[in-house]
Image 1: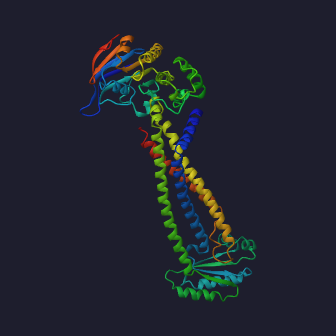
Image 2: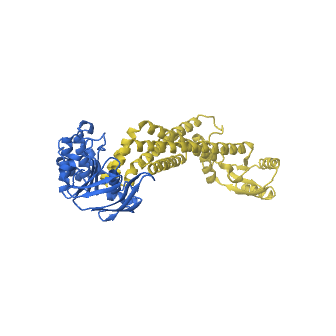
Length: 300
Length: 225
């Protein structure tokens, strides 16, 4: 068992050395395509952060002053209930819920986040309008709520929000499509690299078959080589993603407060998940490319 | 050890390499396959280690009909068969020791077994002390000895040799034949394709003669005709 493992590793790394140029090309292509996948996932998550408070069809948010009493909250509740022909549903986001949301929305402004506590944060009533409710009517409603003394502010899901949603969908789909093509190219390149490696070692393979090596024994070093192409590509892409995300996050901190970019950063550990996903996709792409080549071209 | 029953192998409708061949080879026999180029000698050897399959007939090796053998069992069959070729088929970037060890490594022999058996077989073929040399630092005869060592290191039941002296001068060829004779005396069945008249006439072993794929003579202690 140990001798087989030693043999497999030695042959795999020998093949890396012999096919250095093609190997480098396959790894770089895999890395670029996986970085594309990673950036798409990361940017989608950043957009989700930006739109976090508008999830679930919410189009109007009534922000309550931190000092608002139970009676004042009940007053706003009954006002929302009375508008049931225009407001389909509403929910109350208390201090804890608002702090959680702030972690995402203000991820790029840690200074502001530090100042927020359960006593200082504004709580929120989130309203989902009835289908077909006129936009101008909603604007009018929002200005009525703004006049309540316990209300700090009323935000309305303006056109900007739908524009961001459209942008998210537009870029997300196209970036993913481009990454998909690049990933396909990486699989083809890994496939071709393994095919070349098999051809370069055809004499050895012929001898191996004649002395009784099984097809799997011959195949495994090639499959491992392809798998490593994908995994190394994934690791390089992960390093690139980490560098990109770190640069972006520290860059956003330099932007003026309230510039709107604070939510467009990923600081909740999601980037680590994306790196794991990239490594897994890289390994899968490598295994597919090399597995097909090793099965198809072994009869040399 | 080997039995062919009415074996026919063709590469196309016009090219019939072996036609209705039948013979038995007992354990420990030394058999020459003789005949002109294209008579079907190499095809017969390829049928014996399942590199080719016949259209008709049965090929029995060590008690099993290998024609219907599932592909997954073929490697196990080949571990019992050593192969020697006219062009040696050595791996040029590996040294003598590594070339021989390779045959053991790829079937999963542990390192300590390899370290023990390779020097022994190198001594048998007269190449002890040349373990570190690369194939291109050896003469043709020495390269063929490495090839014989690689074929024999796993102690096969059968040794198939396809024109092993074809690229060698007569004196060196004789040395290889002495080596094969020694291996045969250990109980290994040897089947050798050749058209080297002098060797066949000197050794006086069983001779199976082929002509355009047909066995035309099967003679004990035969000579080249």
